[in-house]
Image (cartoon, rainbow, N blue to C red; front, side):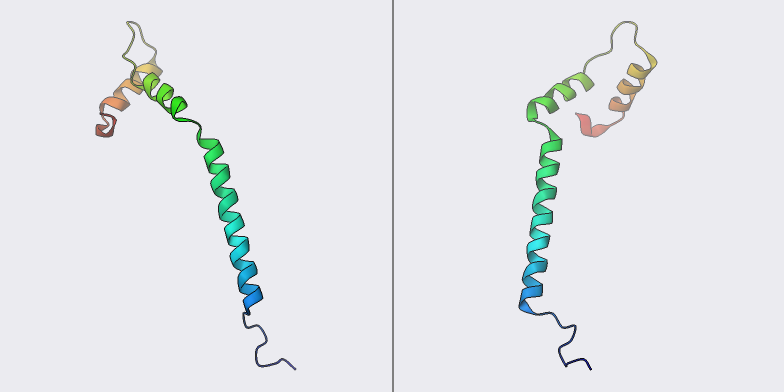
Length: 75
């Protein structure tokens, strides 16, 4: 026969759940931060994207240039 509080959440269960959520969020934040890279990496990548076309460009470079031209957020 089950008691009146069977299945009810108590303080210990709540604290364990909160602790697990904090550990999960912290490890996710650390993993995301380590995968992002540095600001210097971002600036190098952005500089490469915004480089002007060379005289004879590949189809990939022409598509890259056309994509950036159509995007108003890259100003």
